[in-house]
Length: 167
Length: 105
Image (cartoon, rainbow over all chains, first blue to last red; front, side):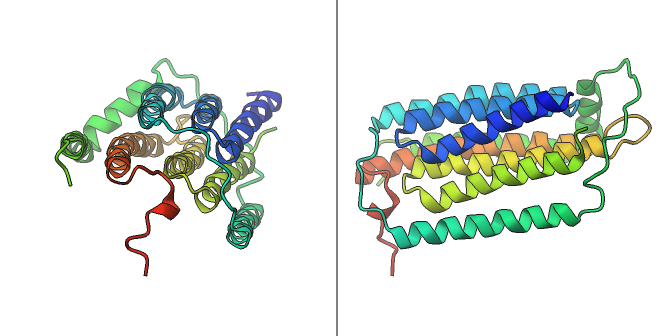
């Protein structure tokens, strides 16, 4: 992938990710999260992980964000009224976030592989869904089944939580 | 030329944005969205390392299977979390975390 496209999609992802934090209206936040996830899916595809990129679009930008929008509209959340902002707490939060990013950048700057380009891939006739699928059903068969049970438990939990007489 | 460090820096910045959102915002749904941003930042660095560790001309697919598991668990987590938020809204008519202070000392 050309550096130009990388920086376009990375910038798109970061700008709309910041939009999630900065928007006052929850619907606008959710929609900018969709754009951020689409940029992230493009970055996955630039790393030759086509399966993960498509899963990202289908599951996150599709299912999860529809669920978020559904809940926001169900609860009928308006744009937040301007409350008294606790400036001390906000400044503390920003300071902690800046300190975290400085630490991350310092660690990446000292990481000895960080300046190496990606090694080339061999031309393969088998696509990556095949490789991921065979690994998933052979080496990771037990975790895969446990994930299935987890999704079932989550479904049952949502039904129980949504019952009206829950108090 | 895009290197591994560029992807890691972008991933770290996305994680920081999500973290700042969790620290700064007071709407519980926005906090939940910022948690999703942090999970996705971790996914991006996992896929970047998977592409970096080329073995016999193929990327290391173990990391991609791990990302697949993370996405599945995150989807289950979103479903349960939003159900909890709806139950909370029914009980208290608010999604503002400062209005929910029963456990506060």
